[in-house]
Image (cartoon, rainbow, N blue to C red; front, side, top):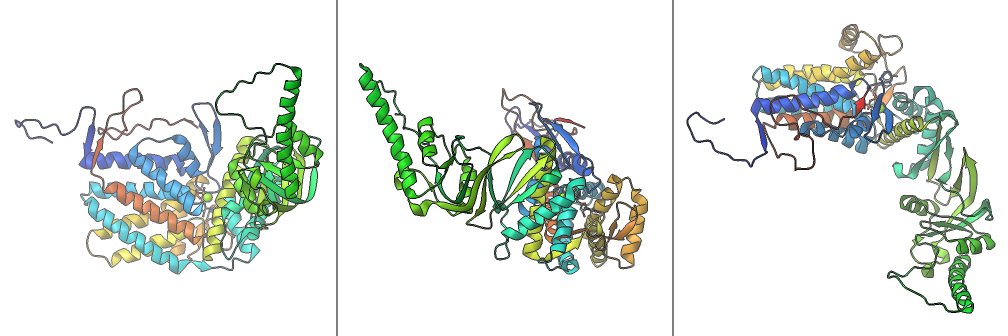
Length: 547
Ligand code: ADP
Ligand code: MG
C-alpha cells in the first residue's frame, strides 16, 4: 500500500481494519458463498431440515431459508447482505427465500472465476445486470396465464409450496389454505392480515381447522359468565376496568370502621358505574386489552356479559377490523356505534386450554386457521409454511401468472441467456454466460438433495430443453427429467422474478465493493471485529450449534 522509504501515513484511527481490492472481494464472496452453502441442502421437497439452538437453549427445527438465516445472527457485513435478500423475498412474496440465496451464492462463485481470469468487476456487474433484465423479459414470455378462480389451480400452487416443508400433512392444509384465501379475496387483492394463524399444541396437523372468524387465545374472566353469546354486541376496550390508581403515592387515614366501609363502597360505586355504562351501550360481550378487577368481574357476570381480559393490542386492532367496532380508550365515550358485532362469541376447550371464538364477524373477510400439531416445533414449521403459501396464493391471484417448478424455469432461462450471450460482443458476454450457468444450480441442487445423480439429471434436462420441452424439471420420485406442469408443480412467476432479481442485485452490489473499512468493536462488546478485516476466511460469530 505504501511505497518503501516513504513516511507512513495513517488515515484511520487505531483499531480500524482495512481490506482492499482482490482481498476485499475474495473475502466478501467467500462469506456470501458460505451463507448460500448453509441453506442449500434445504432446497426443495426433499431438502433437509436444520436444527438451530440459541444461547438460551431454545430449539428451532426448520427448512425455511429465511428462518435459518435470521436465527443464525450472522455478523459478516457481506453475508448480512445475503440475509437481507432472503428477508426481502419473504416480505415481498413470502416464498422463494432459499432459491434467492442459493442463486446469489452461485452468481458470486461464478464471478470469482471471472475475476481470476482478470475480467474487471465492473464488466461482470454490467453483464449480470444485462442478464437479469433479459431474465425478466424471458420470464414474461414463458409464463402461463391461469384462471385463478379455478380451485384446482390454487390447490396445485399451495401444494407445491407446502410440500417443501410439511409433506405428510399437506393435503388437509392445502384445503384449508385455499378456502381461507378465497374467502379473504377483496377486489382481486389478498391481505394476509385477514388470515390469523392461531397455534395450539395437541392432536395432529390434520386436525387443524379453518374458523370463519377470530380466535382469542384467552378464556372468559369468570366461570359465572355465559359460555356462549349469540348475536354478540362487542365492546372493545383498551383501558383497565378498575379504579385508577393515583400517580403519586397517596395515603388515606381511616380512623373508624364506618369510614373504611364508605371508602370501599365508593370504590365499588365507581366500578359499578363503569359496568353500567357498558350495559347501557347495549354490549353483551367485553373484550378488554387490560385487566378487569374482581368487583368489575362480579358486576359484569351479574349483567350476563361475557368478558375477556389482557388481549394483545395487535389482536385488539384485528378484532376491531373483523367485528366492525372501535377500540375505545375511555368508557365515557362508549356508545352503541362503537360496538362490533358477530353471530356468536363462545368459549371452547381446545386441548387443555379454553379459547374464545368470535364467529361469523360482521366483516366476512376475517378468518383464522387453528393450527394443531404434536409439538411446538411441528406447529411452528406449519405456521411458517402457511405464511409462505399465503404469499404464493396472493402473488398468483394478483398477477394470474405462473411458471412450472422443479428447476424447469431456471433451465429455460439459462438456455435463453446462452442464446442471448451469443449476440453480445465484449467481455460482458462472459458474465452473461456465467449468469446462465449459475441458474442451473437450482435444478442441480434439487437433484442432489433428493439423492439423484446431478450429472445425469443435468444432461437429461439440457437434452429435453434443447428439444423445446420447456417445462421439463426434476422429477423427485422417478429421478429423471419430467414435465412439471403435468405433475401439477407450479409456482407464481412473481416468486421466480423476485428471487432472481434480488440475487442479481446483491451479487452486483457485493462485486462493486473493493475496499472494506471496518471500525474495531467497541470495548466491552466482546467478540472479534466484523470479520471483514484481513485476508482470512470470515468468522461467522453467533452461529448456533447446527446439525
Ligand atoms: P424456497 O425457500 O426457495 O421456496 P423450497 O425449499 O421451498 O425453497 O424449494 C422450492 C423449490 O422446490 C422450487 O424450485 C420448486 O419448484 C421446487 N419444488 C417444489 N415441489 C416440487 C416437486 N414436487 N417436484 C420438483 N420440484 C419441486
Ligand atoms: Mg418454498
